[in-house]
Image 1 (spheres, one colour):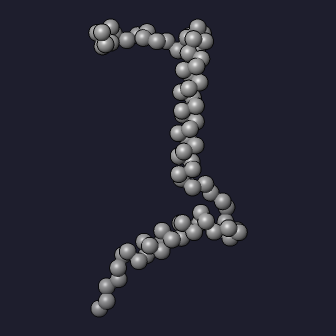
Image 2 (cartoon, one colour):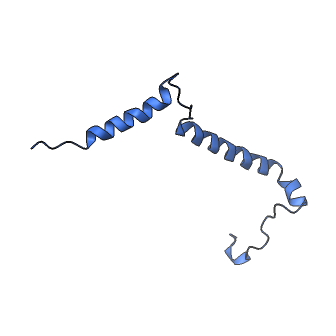
Image 3 (cartoon, one colour):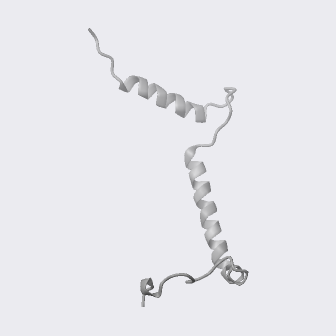
Length: 78
């Protein structure tokens, strides 16, 4: 009796998923590669951090950003 390897169906499944991203004009809906989505999310997060840092004085003036308020001085560094 022959035994079938489990690696073969997994490799076909991986090949199908890769071809789904690269095959042009197959009639399937186009999806973005996961790496592109991840890099876009990281860039948006960095942009938000930079904007908050640039406008921290205005945000603190309207009460959206408080530096050190509510933190016990015991936990702050000297």
